[in-house]
Length: 216
Image (cartoon, rainbow, N blue to C red):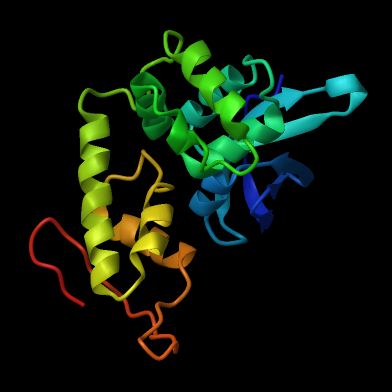
């Protein structure tokens, strides 16, 4: 059983990554959430893995965190949710936020996942509400993440991004990121340059974000 891989990242796309592990190259299917956390090509990379062999077709899935792999395996136990939908969910929600939505019964937010449909969203809330583990490993992690998202959201608005753009991308902020500067850099990479009133794009400028004063 392959449970983790450590190697050199030689290829990456929003739905796949290739690791060179001692001269053997492994292709892994990944979510957008995992893709957002990958380091540049040529860097060392560590991914948690899950091996599936549906009808003899070997597929290896890769995850940036152990929590993502745990949620993936749990999602695929729900009728109607296969690996493809599980990866789509992980591409929109990190495990901490997903757990919060399920516990709150907020199936409407789950409709942000492409193609999931109302029936599957409702089924997830019912089926998983009593089965979700505690993600993040520390009490108050969800509150800290919410505060970080609020801070990054405000910073992106100040840079001139449209609110609807910011609302969508900030929800994808991974739950294991705790540093505001790192979070801002990740969100800037995910966004196109903001537009001014005449439709022209502003240049993206480096932003320093901290718990105190912010400098642009």
